[in-house]
Every structure is written in C-alpha cells, then in structure tokens.
Image (cartoon, rainbow over the protein chains, first blue to last red):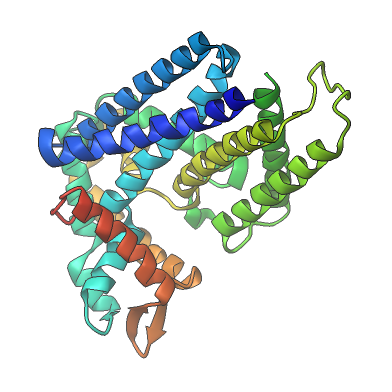
Length: 171
Length: 174
C-alpha cells in the first residue's frame, strides 16, 4: 500500500531534483541555458533510477512501474524545458514582457520598434548559423546539419495530420 | 502494467475525441479547448474505472484497485497531456525557426538569396499574428490605440519575468 504511494511520488521527487539542479547550474556552475537544462534532466533521471531501484530492494514498490515513472519524469522534464525556452524565445511572452515594462501600454508602432521581425530573424538566423543548421555562402542561404530540418518536417507533418494545413496562413 | 495500460487508454481516447472535433471545426481558442477535452476525459475515465468491479478484466488487464493507482494514472495522464499541449503550441503558430528552415529547404539545391529571405520574414507573418493571439486569449486589451495587459496578461508576464530573475538571465531573448 505505502509502496504504491511511493511509486507515485518518485517521478515528482526526481523532477524537483531536475529543477533544483538546473537552477543551481545556471546560477553558480555554468553559462548556457541549454547545458544547464540537460544537466538538470540527467541528474534527475539518475535520481529517478536510484529511487526506483532502492524502493524495489526495500520491497515496498514494484520494479514494473519504472516504465510509467520514466514516461512521467520525461514528460515533466520536456514541459520544463519548453517552459524555460518559452521565456527566452516565444514571441508572445516577449511582447507580454515589453508591455509589462511599459507604463500605460504600447501602440503597434512602439511594439514593433522594440521587437520586430528583422531583429528576431537576425537573432535566430545567427543562432542557426552558429550551430551549423544553416550555411551562408556568397549571400545565399543553404540548409546545413539536418537535425532542425528533420524536426521542422516532423512538425509540418503533424500540422497537416492534426490541423489539415501546413501553415497558420493556409486558412 | 495496470497504470501504463489505463493511462495510455485514457490518453488515446482523449486524443481521438480531440482529433475528430478538430476535423469538424477548429476552435478559436485551441489550447483551452484541448485542456477542456483532456481533463473531461480524465475525470470521466477515472470515475468509470472507479465504478467497475475489481474482478472485471479488459484486454487481460484489471482496472486499478487502489486510490494510489488512480492517482498514479492521473499523474501519468496529466504529464502526457501537458507535454502534448506544449508541443501543440508549435503546431498552432508557425515558429520563426521552422519558417526559416522550411523557406531555405523549399528553395532547393540553389539555396535562398539572403535579400529574398529578408523580404519573406516580415512583421505581418512573424509579429502581428502573435499580437492578435494575445488579444484573442484576453491577455492583452486595447485602450484607444494602445495595447495594455489584462490581469491575466500581467500574471503571465510576471511568471516568466520572475523565473528569469531566479535563473539570473539578463539578456532580452526572443
């Protein structure tokens, strides 16, 4: 009976360790959000495995639930990754932050002065060029490493299957 | 196995309902609709599993017998739902990085001229639709010609601003 409840708590404890380690890493140990997120996830994952194994040896939980708890932990870790990422790159959040920092709101022109497509694309293109996903040669852009292109194609496929359209402007 | 089976069965049921409804008509506030569908399925499913006799067997799997198992199924379902919801935000709106990668890929082996690329990526497709989303989701309202935050918008902004402070992140991002 108690083992059942411990099984429920294990992925939550591991996820809390993930968040705590990520915050400690980004504040005190390393630069770079992505590295801190991966470090937090890895430490949390090892903690989950140790928790599962230890409660199994104590005889108060069943090893068979490890698959369920790995899925729960990975899903929560995935959500946390995107939560942090949203705060950094999501356009809606960036516009909300600009409006929050302004006194009495902003007109459309004022929003676009602070945050516009040119700035956003320059920033993102630079990131893509830096990590080799895109290559710029004599003023021409080419696809580089295939990882992000593969992710883009997967998202496009999901869009077509679920929404029936390739782009939000296809309506 | 009980938790994995029933958790996946409930999630699959919710996904099928969402998929069918989306084929009939796309809701205006899609994320809100997804949450309503998935959490309704969870509540109804847990109540149904609670009410069936412990001796019933479905596909060789018995229903959950303890309260702890019901909570475990709920946690499993909620974590999958949140992961799906956050993935769905990338489907609902065109991500700039995705638009960039697709535009370059669509240009073929000759590549995409940077000048053409700069013309393609404009405020009309990358920024203005997101401002409209904020109005639609009632996080922002109009005050004359000015966009101002609603209490819901203030709460959202504060969550992210506070978390960025905790992480000690100072650059603007975006």
